[in-house]
Length: 350
Ligand code: NAD
Ligand code: UD1
Image 1 (spheres, rainbow, N blue to C red):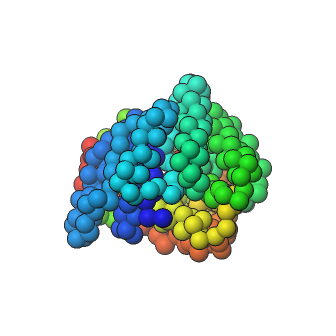
Image 2 (cartoon, rainbow, N blue to C red; image 1 turned 90 degrees about the vertical axis):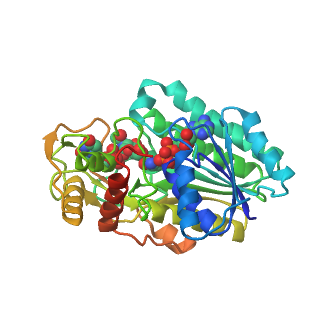
């Protein structure tokens, strides 16, 4: 069970999770098209491990390819057979994630995210691999006000990106139902993954101008962007700004390990699990925290609300705590410190 197929392993969440899995001794077969990333993240993963004296020779195989092409996926499975390091589990990060882009080009998102996942699942069946952890998102939920979101809450995404994530979850449930004595499936609904590895060598390398608040703050701090435009000052929240559940990227990585470990130890099942801290932070609180922890000023002004935004998006994470025995260990101060350390050391990304 030591060989894992990781799709999208060079991306933000994938690279941090790959680092953790390599530290834990897994062998990784990574398939990535580098459409929103580069190989440099994985070179940094190797560097961090070599700095720690961990030898990963023969433990990481990187294949450039696309999940839209099922032969690329097959190539990875065949390679694992030839090396006698047979893949038994998949962690499926590969996907496009820009809400705005998905609204402009829904075909791109449905083809990449949904068709790509169908290809992956078909090839998994062909190679008798029936364990998968999937990157879903809190974006699938219908918003509620001022109460945390439970896994059983109503799902009603409001954009094509969210529709692709919910469709994949439904597809996974259908696949599970088709052969429930074999499949082990976990769909992880991430809240707001942010921050960076504590070394400052690995972090989020948003290509182009980011849309999300956290990378925007670090880019304002480094002087690339003049100020933060806060979307709305009249939300029904403590200070009128939107509240989110920011989760440190290494806590999220640990959530993947916990989910996989649980799946492999337990009976076949289909799980949907929130990965968030359960703690809400407003935009103003986040900015103030970043300023305090890093002793740096973040200029901001108020703008109109953004279309599609909600006042309050926070996880109820009791299921993850209970069944995965997973607890986020890092707080918002750690998030602000580690993200700034990464940005300072890598002003232009990798
Ligand atoms: P990312 O863009 O940094 O990483 C995605 C990776 O997948 C990249 O390396 C990209 O090159 C690769 N990829 C995309 N399409 C591919 C394809 N067709 N074939 C092969 N590789 C492909 O994004 P991320 O933040 O690391 O997100 C990883 C996953 O988590 C995505 O599925 C995303 O939708 C989901 N997610 C992200 C967030 C977030 O806020 N970052 C929140 C919820 C869910
Ligand atoms: C956004 C997406 C969500 C996606 C997630 C990860 C929208 C409406 N939601 O989530 O579907 O899963 O990114 O990619 O696009 N903010 C500002 N100014 C900015 C940017 C953001 O004030 O320039 C505020 C937002 O109004 C929100 C908070 O910061 O209150 C967090 O925003 P963001 O980082 O974009 O994340 P989400 O909106 O949670």
